[in-house]
Length: 138
Image (cartoon, rainbow, N blue to C red; front, side):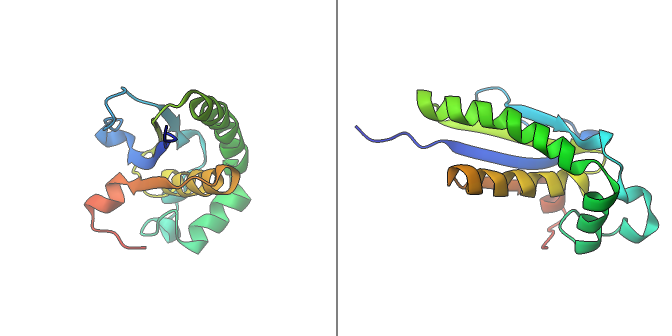
């Protein structure tokens, strides 16, 4: 009998465009709302940058509660990953939304994928929905 692989999709999106569809057919997964974290996009020097640019990363890590937000999200997601692995589930979707899908949600998506790799040695598929629509490379 072969071991079932847990496919994890972690993605960023803009609430202006709606919550993403679950391609697995399971109807959802986690949706975390990053809009409670101070938005770097409100400051001119960060408007054209994304959550992968160092100035935005420094802003989020030093001037917001992004660490507390992500620690809570990681704790919740860990419960499900542990359970899904034990029960042989095949799919988990984790989405991070913010106003424009550019700063907070991009940072959070990358941080969650890194956490999953480090804690579980699992690769997550990462999509930055809004940035990919713009043919973004960063």
